Length: 341
Image 1 (tube, one colour):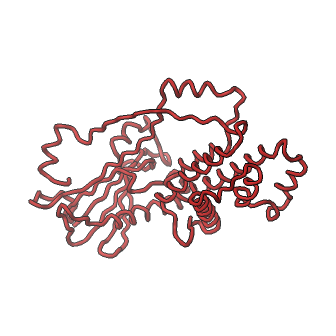
Image 2 (cartoon, helix red, strand yellow):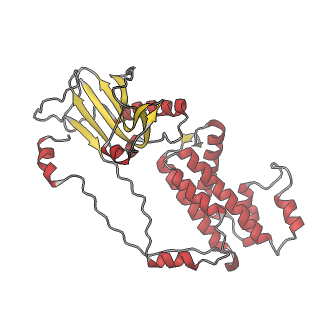
Image 3 (tube, helix red, strand yellow):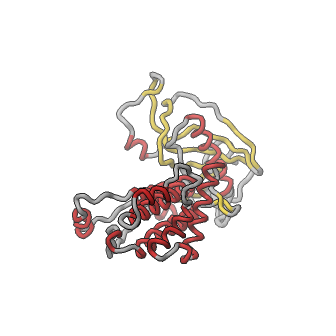
């Protein structure tokens, strides 16, 4: 029996148009044989396709569906079952994509199964759809919805234009946003988040030092011409910050711990390629929490600064409601007679 997984990708491959042939490759995994089929096309690919495209002087088309077959004698197709397992599907999906990214050097090849729409269809050994059976499903699927909508009402519009003409956007604020945008790639996110804090505290201390210390003295303290002699980022958030504003980030235990964890994860990723802290790999959910604490650290320090050193902040009361139809009315009867399809 075949369980055919079709995953809609957030990027496109350019592949030779039929009748071009691809060899099929298989690998053995516990409980399954896994076979990779040539990429397919979704309706979205048809809509966005160019008028014509060629690859190696031959007709080609864009493909955005990765197709993987799981093969074994029989699958558990009861409604409550998970066969093949989510872990098996994720492993096969990541296996092929990572190798495709490496071979093609295609930086755009980046996706997580949990963030992609997918459908699993059970077929017989010849690849034909199974007959309907009571208590058994003929397929499963998931619709992944990810919205990236920015609210813009009249108040926000006005706030954008009310910034002083000579106002310079802080570099660290862009790094904070870049860190959030880098998710779900945890390594990139922690590197950018840690860089944001390092740039932030450096610029804050530079501003505080002006008019308090001579330029030559502050340069001697902050830039000794040797990285190992300069104050560490920990010392900047602790000793130097307390000297200028009377507060150390250590006063906020949870934020201090998050700062150290983020820094450790950044260092491990830079040196080993794996974002780890305290012996544990940082996953997406933990990275999201750490980046939230980056913003909390920035806001905490802002509250300790004299008014003249505070950058403008904007908050808005907004209420956003949305609906999304997951099926059309004329499909409901079909869906109800084939549970899980």
